[in-house]
Length: 95
Image (cartoon, rainbow, N blue to C red; front, side):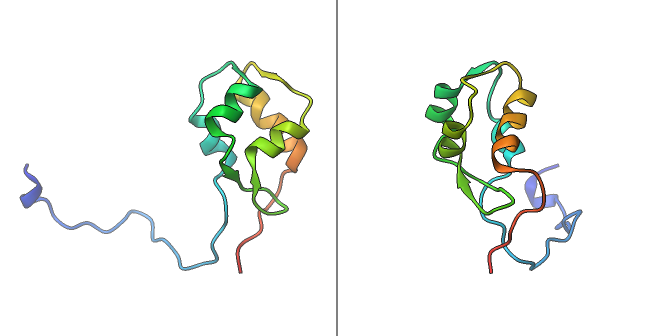
């Protein structure tokens, strides 16, 4: 079927007009990386990314500098270390 013949379809999920949440989800950042990774390599690749935290958006490089970890053998180790630093819970929305 060519593009000309395709029907216009509605999105499967309606997107709301709710408040904006600043920053990228941690899971999205973690999914862009392969494991294992050294902290310095993560900072080189994704350090300038702003992630969502319960206290508002924070730059990933600053969060990683505050952790004691220098090597993440798995995605779960990375996510756990970041969550220990920033907390886990609902994120603030932009007003």
